[in-house]
Length: 110
Length: 117
Image 1: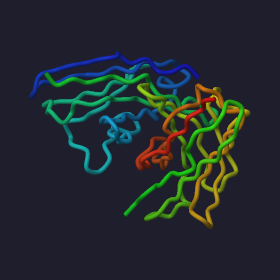
Image 2 (image 1 turned 180 degrees about the horizontal axis):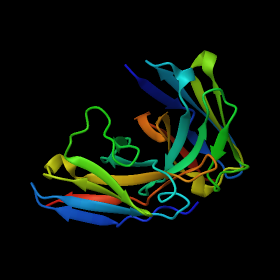
Image 3 (image 1 turned 135 degrees about the vertical axis):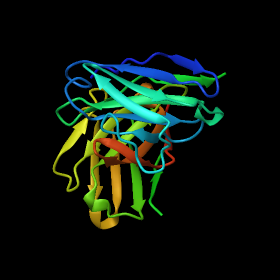
Image 4 (image 1 turned 90 degrees about the vertical axis):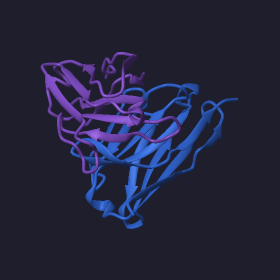
């Protein structure tokens, strides 16, 4: 159960797009379409932004999108806004009733 | 309103035990798998455990396997996490969360566990 690999930081200017990667193995990200993404503001609980690789829960802006290729999943935030500044975590099912999170990426809106 | 409220956190000595509770409201608790997730101070979130709707299937992170036990009482709409043989590295905010297609769509505010002598 090794954590998924995310870049520690990412940044972009308002209106730009930024993509955060999440790399796992064939035993987790590559093996299942159960990748999800969470946004966490300081002092708050995480919020689900993407589930099943590319599906958005009700209420999540369509500026947020997800994708996957082989063992790497990605979250793209388009039209960056100030309120998008937060920590982002990916998660994947890892088989045998286990899940695993990534180490998190701090997104800064310049 | 869909809500999860955790309780039971506190200060405990290394080697001690603690039981966390999470009361669910606003949805049919017995229809959902449930999770525990933790976050150490200044660190990322880490999945801890999950349990099936009827409690017959559970999963644990390697770091807590054999020490923590997840359970639920559907009659009381309550999820539990029994934590034994606690270590300093178990210090964290513990969140309960509702499963949604193997993700977590509803989260509580968390309860803080501090393991220290």
